[in-house]
Length: 132
Image (cartoon, rainbow, N blue to C red; front, side, top):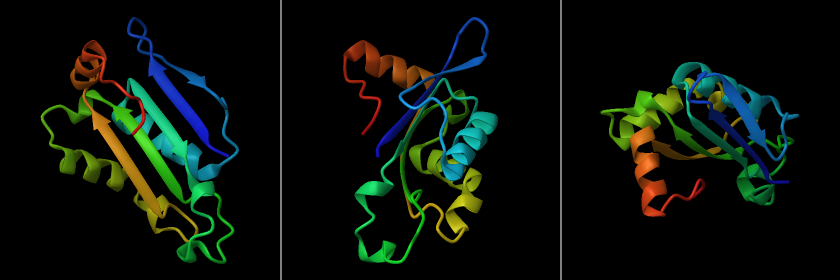
């Protein structure tokens, strides 16, 4: 089942609030992603898509009991300011290195990383697509 989690930050209070299709995940890897990204990057937007079900039939997933192997993340954070995409992605990979190294952990990770200004520009131009 595709699960989409979106966290936005209220500008006035800077306190995170969650708008989700499934407000609380029953998946430890997804929870770890949310906690680590939120703590380190203070994102204004965090969208987590668990696409593992789409890849369960792949040969590489044979014998795996994990349902948390393939994720897409959309992250908007001021921490990405003055960083190019490869540096932004390395930052996220470093935050999730344990989940990527663990047996049955993250096998594939797609990232869309933006600064708040880049997101605002895309929204103003009408080109914003939260996901890929």
